[in-house]
Image (cartoon, rainbow, N blue to C red; front, side):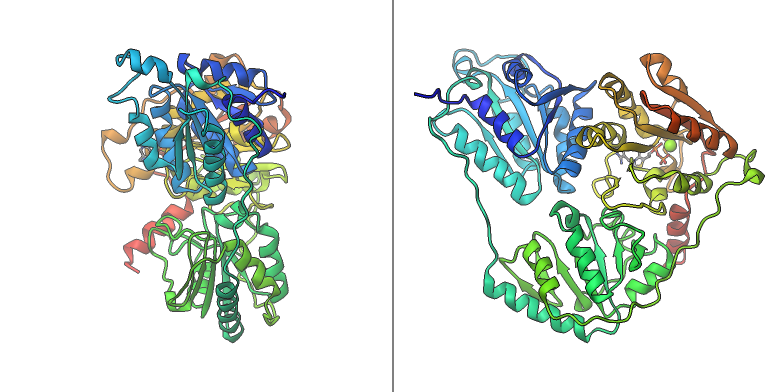
Length: 545
Ligand SMILES: Cc1ncc(C[n+]2csc(CCOP(=O)(O)OP(=O)(O)O)c2C)c(N)n1
Ligand SMILES: [Mg+2]
């Protein structure tokens, strides 16, 4: 008879089946047994410097590949990924948190085991709040089913899950002849039909409809559907900051990023004067909506997400987002003339005139705009790196990642690692403030170790610039590191100091040519300088619109 598969092996097998090839984390005695299995499997374990780095990397990996995994030890490791798991939950990213734990048998004998906080299930209780499903694999009879249940929840709800592996059960056999459960959820046909009929009538009657595409369009594999819908109807499409690059920005029907008063005025006007706003997979968050400066009347909206479908004030239950979006393509929507799209002015490249001038945030982003290539993925951290990037022109969809809702600093450098492992064809361009860099920037060691070559731009404005504009004080200062010398510390990569536009151009050219390892450009900025996007927001808020 064939050997029953062990619990640990089954977990690895299912992760692999769902496209996972790398597992990020740091081992510890409670999880060493599982690491041993990982080592012998087709999955590669990626050791980061800190668990938080592993968590952010797994999140970014999941955003690109559909599923990511982080593997840590009990409590000391697990609780360090609480924040990154929270971000994955809030921003809908499918991360599987795997934590080792004391064996079931040893718990009985000895309640004073190291790393324990309060009770043996304290960590599990914390993660119940941060995930969409969680389990402790404490019973070989149910363990394989539990793995199926929890992974299915991650896939279905696009949110993180938690799997705790007591160390004495990692190699225990699960029940024999178990078959993975494949579940296909369907929409309620009648409700779907009624929803599509109302949407069709509303869109056809509208004079100036517009689509706002957000991150779920990408997470549910619908960018092509969105493009088809726009092509078929000639309805213009705007993106949100979180969903920026869901759609290639070169499309003729692409309007730009809509973010209330924070965005470009033409885009704001277009969207807010529309009589039918189709919000596709949109998160109605504050940053996404320009810190609540957006003016969208629900009576003019079709709001479709994985969680909710509403048309005007009518709610439709049991309709899958995918089915609704696909249904719109089949609906009898009239084709209209493409309205004039307010185009962004083409930016001039930095010419010799400004070459010796002190670099500003505005010019930095303008120059980066022309540096972006087809294989660039822009990853931003919180701060002006994120706000400024709203104006970048992303050529292809899904090529922009930023924690625009939960907004935890420290995301970008580890995310660059996750992105490049998820898709080795791309070269990440990481934009990170000096404050955020001080949190997780040394994960560049991980990039160097695994042969990755992100280009990292550290926006060095000597502190928490974004906060200086709200309220300033010595708490917004950070010790100015010699960021450009990080390569000396790590024995890998290249560092550049950039003060002027000319130096920026030279450093970017050199970074493009140097592909062996990471490049770090330390861009020195005035502490009070800020991007046009932050500037716009401040000005419009001041006018109290
Ligand atoms: C983990 C975390 N701690 C604190 C904050 C609050 N916060 C938001 S922006 C910011 C300053 C960011 O500084 P920096 O990374 O240098 O970017 P800058 O604002 O200077 O562009 C801080 C501290 C946060 N968002 N995340
Ligand atoms: Mg800063």
